[in-house]
Image 1 (spheres, rainbow, N blue to C red):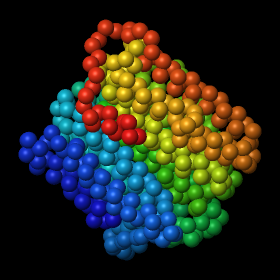
Image 2: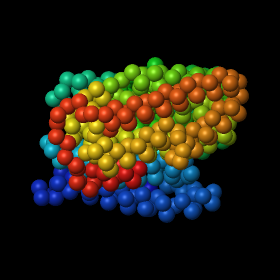
Image 3: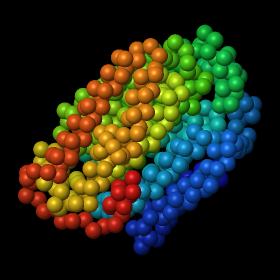
Image 4: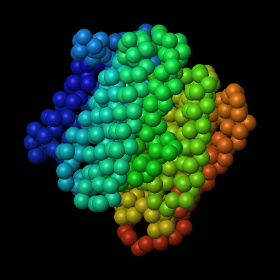
Length: 454
């Protein structure tokens, strides 16, 4: 695993050395690289499913008890497969999407480094190393959001996301240092073994709050949710990869990773679900009020992240099961929808729902792809989103405490999501075109391949 991460980081720098004739295919090369990573990880499924784990470590700062270590277990393998698998499709999509822009080598350099950083984050076996990769993703996100740096909106959005997520990361580090001092280690296995000591410590609550600060900023939870809609200034491949499937899920990953250590306490089961519910409702409301297609998708992502945090805050077996399934389902349909949004903007020159309409005839394949993704977002059969929503309802009904209230809020949120899905579908593809722009059918394979497969 150490070799794998080093290889990805090294090959990112090789992009600058490619001959001019090959630079037009760099996204294809990266897709094959990530496909190889995905294949290697898929080969570990049988091993991990049997309950085994793999770990690697080399000394880093032995005097401080720190090493460079990676752990492959069920959780890290699942997220690593998500990062590499969706990465393959996003880079294929970006091959066509980015052709008309300058500076694509730098763009793919940052995006590949981001892939490596996300893999490093989810595979890390100690929390100091996890924090380092965590901040790598923050910095790389800044460069990717500001790709259109000549626009003031892009610069402002990039700086806003950097400040919020970077400061949140520093708060998380402070929490890690506080709680690590109670068990004398920053290794995940030592934290799990010393969970009782951590929960009984006087530093548990301040440590928990600081770590949750990192989680809530990274995963766009209330009151830090506002950076995510601004980040939609980034190119569509960035939105599809970072802001729906990977980076914004890093906070959710950390909640899953640390729930055996920090979860199950009155503090956890009161703070985490409350923030999740507020975020879910805020995302639902603002999604229905927007007219910018990517902003709508950003707020539905905030809604979904709120649902995930709520489920992990409930911290029961059904809620964790529902969270894991919904996390992957959401990544699939939301990455697809962001790709569709980028495609539509490329072909029509706008993302404004009030300037779109009647595109079904011109883009029949895109219509079908969008329909399937929106059905999944709305939680309607026969899509996987329906199964995910059913498990979420089951988890909410079985939740301790305010089960009926949580169920009602969840139902309201789902009604909003259904309304948002139908609004997108009818505004974009039905009715008469508002503008007279020409919309020729796209015949580029990679533009629709990844979107359709998701």
